[in-house]
Image (cartoon, rainbow, N blue to C red; front, side):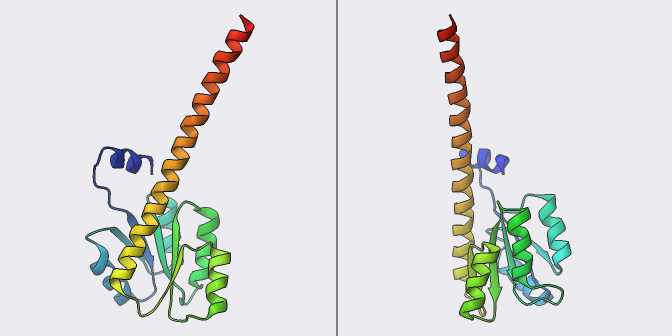
Length: 164
């Protein structure tokens, strides 16, 4: 994400990278068609494929369908939260049961839960907001690191003065 931060600071347009995991090929195609202009869209039809793509790096947001044959979207996002905490996580579900939603947010540390059928513009806004939150956190972490480095330099100078 460091390159993206530099590009952003130089006003170079950077498209956020979104990974969409769903076992339904038509949903993958539809998602790609709807969001490819504003985002770099990667798709996967299995959790293993999606995990490997996340491990390769460069993904900002992962959007996952809840109902998949091999594991639920919630189970997958729990793993993502542990192994890739910097990636924003969004769960799409056809079932808006309150207990499932609360469990999803708590266990998977999920940014948002979307219910099907979803509004394309609503998701577009949600993806932009999720990316803005990632950028803000990265910028904050970058500034904190710079401040720590500056403090170390000041402490070194102070020690030098005290010793001389």
